[in-house]
Image (cartoon, rainbow, N blue to C red):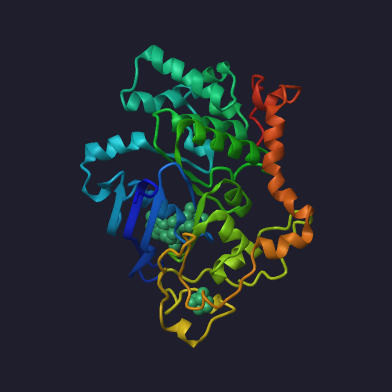
Length: 379
Ligand SMILES: Nc1ncnc2c1ncn2[C@@H]1O[C@H](COP(=O)(O)OP(=O)(O)OP(=O)(O)O)[C@@H](O)[C@H]1O
Ligand code: SF4
Ligand SMILES: [Mg+2]
């Protein structure tokens, strides 16, 4: 029996950081990623969600060998990343690329857009000069920027346009895996939809595997095939996206879903239950790390850590002692009562795509016209 091809596999992966406490200078250990097991399938969009500081970026960086794991193993296309030699790690950079949250700070302001997109090709010795120029022109076209953009500098573009440059640069070397760490969260919401749609189109066209981190669960629901929910360095639920949002099985997932703003009013759902801050990762709670904030906690939760169980028939995994008995609210429970308004938040992307299909018009500044000389909008 052959299942989907696994491009990335994490087995009991850990990443610790040693930090100094400010006042006394004593060393403290942050378990940013703690015993993570997961498999990313070739060609899927795999999302990682969770509150700020839960370890999403660290996990993505360990999975792609930007930083080494402190424990456990990561396999990329069957190779143990911990065993790679420096030259092999450099070669891996061609296959695994990042798109960062802030396209302005991640693009060298002194390089033209053409040079920025060409740089990965030169770094990896890909193509002749003419071939590289042709590749830059083709990538600019694919991300919806005019050819003359190649001679301009990042500050001459809007935030959305800069992120298009960031995408073109990430795709230049022909990667297999692209990691988007909050790729649209710095952008205005209408621009977000355009950039998300470009990413999805290019994923299909280039046969990419996408790993996406985003705070906006509407973005995740729109893009992801499967979602891993992280809490204090651990995966607490992993499931196909529709099922995770419609019928969460972990109380923390339920709380995240409940916190998605309602489409019509921007208000939060009535049953948002998670209160308080993420606990200090240096001294996490005993038992289930979520127990101090969990409305369903029982005595056992304070002492016995729940394991992420094996995948069920639907491919869902959950780390909660009460997963089998709890009936939690998801988008289905709350949104069907609000139809059709409930659908409008997720309609955003469909509308953006429809707008893209229209011929260029006076809004050409966004896509086609040469940028003005002053700094672009801050979207
Ligand atoms: N280089 C580092 N040195 C010390 N601690 C670090 C380092 N990088 C991350 N951490 C800590 O590891 C934990 C996870 O951080 P990480 O950046 O992975 O979280 P995140 O989920 O990506 O958060 P955000 O949503 O804010 O980007 C945090 O407690 C953070 O302070
Ligand atoms: S194990 Fe207990 S505390 Fe943890 S999520 Fe489940 S019910 Fe809540
Ligand atoms: Mg992060």
